[in-house]
Length: 156
Image (tube, helix red, strand yellow):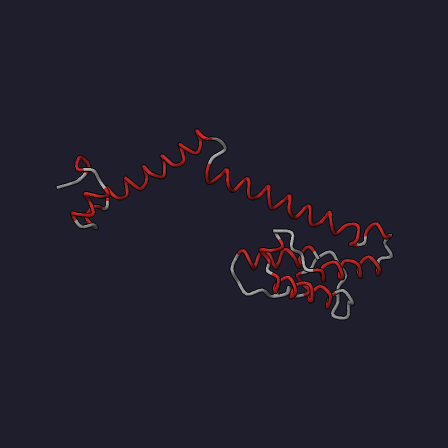
């Protein structure tokens, strides 16, 4: 199930058309075309595709994932503590916690961890743009240059 979910998320991140993975690409499970879980995984994949893979990261998980998980637990004769009624809420919480941690890391990488780092990032970006405009001012009209660059930086 994890491989199928990772496949869907990967395709969503890469903006490709969602495609259920072939059984050869689902490791660590003795799966065949007659496996009773395979159609349930396909249904869950399709349901999540309709619901949206981005929604999975928001904790909006297609119910059919839990159906597939419960069938696996049933086939493997696992105790009730492994069924989705118990593990489902923890899975959703884990997804939300991971998404939040990823967002925090991304936000800090883009904007800095504190005010000083944010100021440095914005200063570096402004400096880079200014250098680019100065280097490429021949691409702009003279009136654009008076707006983009102060007179002391303009070539004449």
